[in-house]
Length: 470
Ligand SMILES: [Zn+2]
Ligand SMILES: [Zn+2]
Image (cartoon, rainbow, N blue to C red):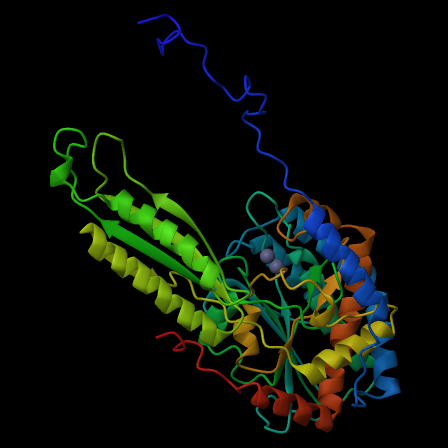
């Protein structure tokens, strides 16, 4: 054997010797696509006409009383937002955040219930205005929803501190306005809703009856754009477990059944069906367990996927296709299989209520914000929220409000930097005022209530969420 042919002594054909840069650092994804989308969106936004509403809403006297109350609350709301940002408590552990909300409510004479609907860090506060009684069918009820949970690693990279301050601000604006001025009769409830990120607190609260007596539910979310009906798609969690037969991987592999091979095929098959999914469907997964060591045929492997689709019905179809993959691969590999759906409650696609969204947009326009519809914004920016589950039970809105440049993604450290910015403070002022005014519109305007209900019914009415996928 010549020296050159000896593989142990020949120079290795590394990437470096071929002139290809290889190292521990990944490549940096290009911004080309996002840049093109941002340019298109800027053109669409500039051309978008203001959104109008055919409804009257609350009177000028009501709205000016609410605006004045909201203005006077702003320093306290920004301070609350900043404190919740600093706590950065994760889902179901938002003890300090919710205690600070209760404390601010108490300073304004409102006693909140801490712990509700089976969740320790949920909160309920109530305001009954005018002649309305809580048990009266004549009294419309609006729920204003606050979130305050943070994310591991990126803290308030989803800006839920802004959601909390805006919702509390809207509620307190109505409280303070009702003390100086006779507001339209009805009931306003403030719900503190824990664990939006991964825990689906709103679904847990809904199953415990939180929305049974609610006629409309409203909240906001910070974002890179102002949009009335930003798509939030449905999401389920799928776990697939394969059970193999362990064997010596070298001496007697033929006596084994390889769970990791089954998991690998499952991952590949899921990747291959992506070409044939509906536009907007998304599947993304990880292998949670792939065996212990190479010399033992893996006895157990487990995958976890997030499975998302634009519509509840297409999410159901996608779920069945993934079950077929899981089962088919078990047959092919001689492994056992277990398919587990929804270890946590799933999220439903968000259904927007157009008449209420229009009221939101009108009030934001009055504050100098040009609010877009989803037709003007990139369709790829689709996450999921547990407010989806509320929105298919009662008419609801979940507009997004801009606090950052459009290209900054939610769930990043960069977005977290905007969550205590001056833009965030402006958003809290606009959102607390806007949510309070939409609530007042709903109480004041029976035509708006009827239109909101008709829009909800036309979109399919109340769904049996709990039983939808079973
Ligand atoms: Zn989030
Ligand atoms: Zn969020």
